[in-house]
Length: 273
Image 1 (cartoon, rainbow, N blue to C red):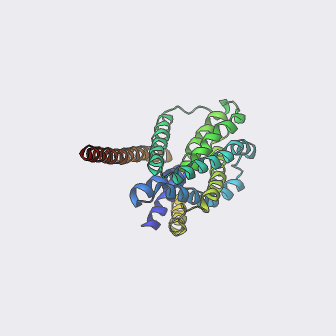
Image 2 (spheres, one colour):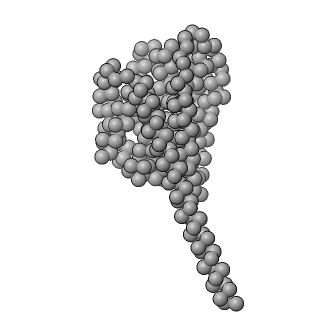
Image 3 (tube, rainbow, N blue to C red):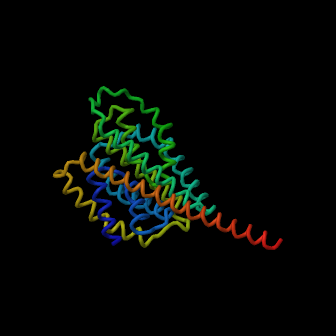
């Protein structure tokens, strides 16, 4: 099953351009029952592994705008370290349900924004003013989101590049892939030496992912990207809602246990008197 999931995730990454972490975490948590912190750790490492295959090809084609990438990493690199630290602190404090809640919020917000963004009319890229110096500030919270949830680098990075730079579409894709690779690599390093790592599951996903990436490359010229990407965001929006619903159920259960304990304790205290 893990090999199949790795294949499916890499296939959709190649066909839609949606980031590996955005897809990987909800699938691992909701379908395999992997704890959220472990899923985030695996999502970062899997994303880095898949994009390691893609980055050299983008570089050889001249699709990476190195100066723009530098602006992005200036904010994204420290952001991903801070996001990883926040996740570690929540796990240490035993607040895994808070992690699930925040992951649900991130998925719902990102998916909703991308669905709305997909209806935006596409103008000429040459008409967009070069405001790439803003990327350093904007990529800091994006990097923090990646470190905390492994999601956001691909979706939010490409949207920022489209809005703030006059880069050609191929350069937007190449630069965003390079940004996602570096921040995922940094986040992987922050998560690797923690209990929230599962090397066996990671290797199984990568093995299936390699086949999925090759298959997606062969199919990409025959399948329209935009409708498939839109459908994927709808699906991720539903999964985000499932995260929120599950988190609410756990909260209600924990709340009920606390109230029940308080009732029993109060009754025992009154009986003793």
